[in-house]
Image 1 (tube, helix red, strand yellow):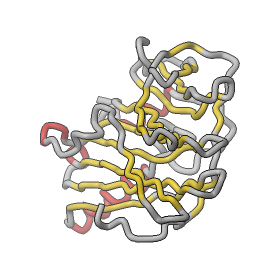
Image 2: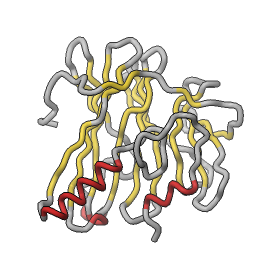
Image 3: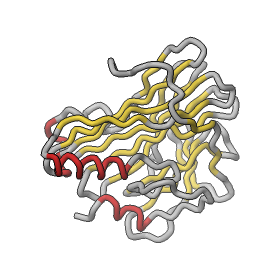
Length: 239
């Protein structure tokens, strides 16, 4: 099977933001893929296996009241294809310090301890707030090491309703989907590029909160919020 990194050859999103680091899907909102590979290489070199953790940058809401960030857990094994990655996203109320834990309801999100899922990757990171700071959009990347399987899900936290919704393009055929951001034309929708490995053209799709998926040609992805280092106020070790 193809290495997961080869997924990048088929996806060329027309976005102007530079890529900060390597990512399995060449996403403009990269997961810490370099950290994963470098940490596993270090574990192998030291013959010291077990859990390692990574905390992402914080994404502060436009109103300055909330910060979202992720803790990513690598369960390292001697073979990369047997290692596993899981994650939790936190939303911190910067006025009270209260933490809200966000997890996806995508296929691998709640099964990272299943022995049959060796090599599973399930990483959730914050991507964008809404302009009014009432919703948060997260990117859930799921796949398997040493495989071309890899796709994005959108995870949306609604502050007013205190609900979490997981979305992906529905009722269309694709092998991989790439989350782009909020829809400029319809701010309650999210945009994806989705297609099949080997195809040069990947169309853009808008996905409504109920999952309804439609082709879109004139839309643009929008993101809001400020990325900062170490905005969290306390330890999340207990999580």
